[in-house]
Length: 398
Ligand SMILES: NC(=O)C1=CN([C@@H]2O[C@H](COP(=O)(O)OP(=O)(O)OC[C@H]3O[C@@H](n4cnc5c(N)ncnc54)[C@H](OP(=O)(O)O)[C@@H]3O)[C@@H](O)[C@H]2O)C=CC1
Ligand SMILES: O=C1OC[C@@H](O)[C@H](O)[C@H]1O
Image 1 (tube, rainbow, N blue to C red):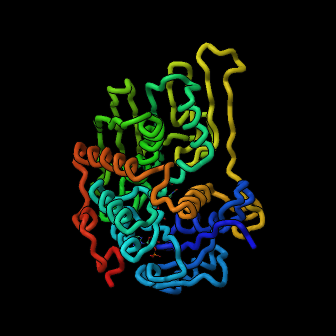
Image 2 (image 1 turned 135 degrees about the vertical axis):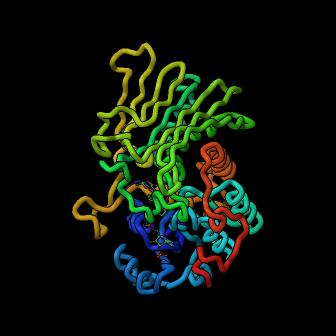
Image 3 (image 1 turned 180 degrees about the vertical axis):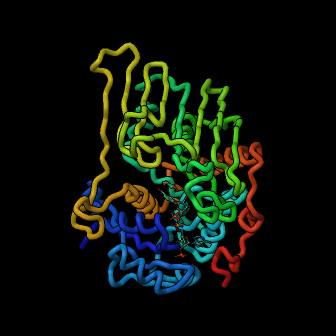
């Protein structure tokens, strides 16, 4: 009999990231040297139809035992599901996660966690009251590379860290001044809580917070936030820069995001454009290369060091060559690490993860609220409300 702890997943929504996540879930954990937990695709649900959910299961090469549902309500009532992965647009996260929690399900919810901090607090209160696991799916935090960098910072390898700069930007501007996304697309549609801040800026903030907030000892200091926001014609933000000030720690963060210029104009994997994040300490610096949601290289520079004290570390994402679907390269995007973390928390009876705990998700949502306030960003009441409605149209209306 296997001594591995098995988690049975239910996938809520069948779009792009649901597909990528589920394919990762179905890889053999051994490819990433994980031997204590494993994952099963128990069910998937589409708000549009049962046949869409069936097509999804087929597309990810899921097991024949996986159930397909034509509504989110049916999924959250399935007794064979341990945890729900919420993969809808930002606008839907609060209502969908509440729906799952209210039906006694643990939840891993895509980023950005919610549309505002009040919603995030309500989710946390509900999970706490019902003794359920809840985590915002900021997958990058679970990368072995992120864990290693946090360890190095805590160990003082680069001395006291005073500044972190982080950028995640995509060049999607067209010659006529518009962006590459149709106005209805979730990236720019305010009805879906679109905009650079919630979609990409969350990663810039992640790199700032996982160093300057997460690595603080003792009672945590929250930063003062100042923002400059430019809006797209849809009302969503297209370019946002955030200054975060921690006077008590003599540290500052600069988090930027844009839909008009790219962090890595020469392609995802290339370090030629320079680091996407710089973690600057008194004894040295750690530089992170590649898009900040999925970086695969970092550099450690020690102040006054000889040439040999500049170390480049490559962290390729392992792939499973046995899984069908992604050509000869195999399957593996890096989302399996957050699934492993959720599984270990469930196994150990933990309601929140130490990698990204409830406090930190809320504190980051509060910073984003402040940015929204300063930039005059607002979303429709239907998606800003922190009142749960099982029959909300965001839950399928039934
Ligand atoms: N971690 C990461 O790297 C990434 C995370 N994301 C996050 O994942 C979430 C989803 O993004 P993504 O998968 O790219 O989005 P998609 O548009 O590809 O998929 C979203 C899915 O949500 C469901 N949905 C329900 N209501 C709506 C609605 N009104 N409009 C659109 N979709 C709806 C649909 O599934 P159905 O019809 O089956 O119900 C749809 O397929 C976002 O929160 C985003 O920030 C996105 C990309 C990468
Ligand atoms: O989380 C994300 O990371 C990758 C991006 O392409 C995507 O828009 C975003 O949602």
